[in-house]
Image 1 (cartoon, rainbow, N blue to C red):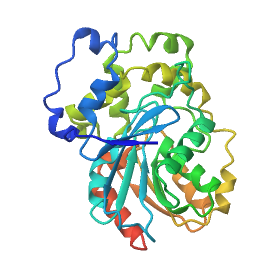
Image 2 (cartoon, rainbow, N blue to C red):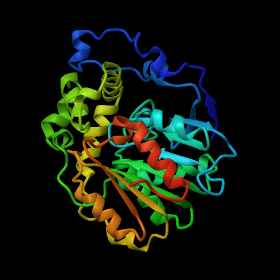
Image 3 (tube, one colour):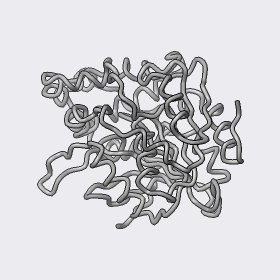
Length: 327
């Protein structure tokens, strides 16, 4: 499985020069081609690796000798409809002392959907994500790692720790999924057949922007460039169809969260107190089940605190990796 270094500049450097969107594009009547997304949003350090037939976008940065413990890298996994960019500031800070790996989960970001041998878009349910993350970690030769996961990425992270005993040195769950919950309204829309059928052909960017604002505790913190990135990725070629296949599988009621009681992994649970997508009571549920887990609540922050207040999250991660947590 070969990787390819990207020569594109940082996405942030060129984001302000992004072309305006036409009326048809704003309505979501056309999709953004994958090569355009790669041109716009790869960063210095971006690489691509073949995983399950897809070219997966990831960033591998920092010191190869740095670690969060005994030499293992830090692997950061984003949530639903997000991308590796959500970790930009936090990853840059950690990369001064550690090797940090971030990836775009399928069907999101630059990576986009996984496809079958016949070209059909695969359904990204939990078994498929298990197969994907196992293959990705193996392809990069990662035997042990510290996992940092947000939302869906948090579920993938703790599930990986449960399935691979001894392979996870530390675990950080940021507003993680896993306990029974009502899906956020912007995701639950895709449980309606009419939305699933129409979304690949028309989905106004206003809906995407409203959903992004909803994951921030203070929507005023979101800049136009960030909003545009979320819209471009959501309108990426194949992504809306893949989401339509994926959402009906998002049922956490049958997940065995009691298995968390058997984890023997230093764990930090970070949570935005104004999370409108996953109840903040779930932070206590994770902390209660995982032996010795530490919990930090962020007043005023929402579902993606690492993006909304990255320096605050970075400080807590550094303290945790140093052997404790900040209150």
